[in-house]
Image (cartoon, rainbow, N blue to C red; front, side, top):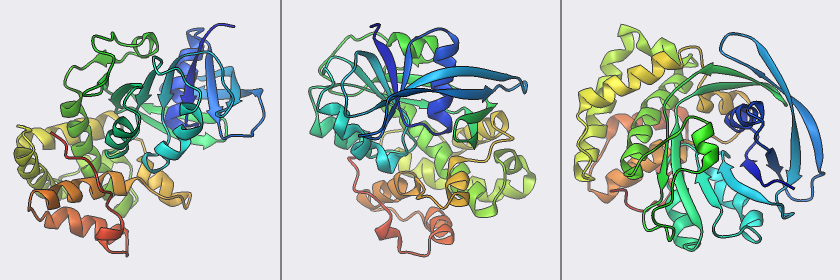
Amino acid sequence: MAAAVGVLGAGAMGQLLAMQLAHQHVPTCLLKRPNTGQQPRQHTLINRNGQPLCRSLQHHPSDQPLPLQALLVLTKAQDCEAALSPLLSWLDPAIPIVLLHNGQGPQQRLLARYPKHNWWWGTLSDGAQRIGACEIHHTGSGLRVAGPAPTCPWPGSSLPKALHRLGFTLHQDINTALWQKLTVNAVINPLAARDRITNGTLLSPIYQGEIGQLCEELALLGQHLTHTDSANQIHRRVLAVAKATASNRCSTLQDIDAERETELACITGCVLTLAKQQGLTLSNHKALLDSLKPQTVDALVHSVTRVS
């Protein structure tokens, strides 16, 4: 049996990457919760031109070993650690595990807890929307980068073949890439969710003042964390992603619509945690989070390892 690429997390992004791999005839398997059945299911990807692509994807319970060449993790950030636990009981430490969720916190905790595994961290800014259980729409293409986690015990590892097939590029300073993705998510996700709008609506002039204030606070925090991006650079990056995914409803808004827990604790919550560690108060980000969650901010933020 040929080693497959395992995809953990069958949401919009997980199905998108799984379908793109399957379209290239790469053996691909969607890893589901323990004690679920093993069976193929028909999936449909509607590409950016509106054309449907249908493929059969194997579903496999995550607690049952199978030969893997790589593991792509696309669960929600808050579910990542629990979802990985059954696999880590049997997965060969040499197999690349690529964490691709939004936000930060789980990456650092998993690296500290399982230091012998081959951890990779990555980001992608594509837009994808789930239409049905096994049908998604690719609404926007974006940047895809990945790199070995700091202190990973597998130095010199080249980009896993699965990531190369998916158009990822190797980033040697993945902490910087994750910070840049975090700054984008910390602006787009809560704003779009608060006002229930598509990402492209944030290009309107009426949002630029508020976006500018959020970017000023992120740039200030970044300076304390040795990141050099100016507020203008962050602002331009936010608008570029909003334009590239203009028709997309961000994952936070999709979660709210589906009455699921959002990833804001690992996005805005992470930003506020890092700010607190640096003795900073980011009043605009706090107010934005408060507008979405009636609970106190302290109940939402995760304790995360300092990002540098």
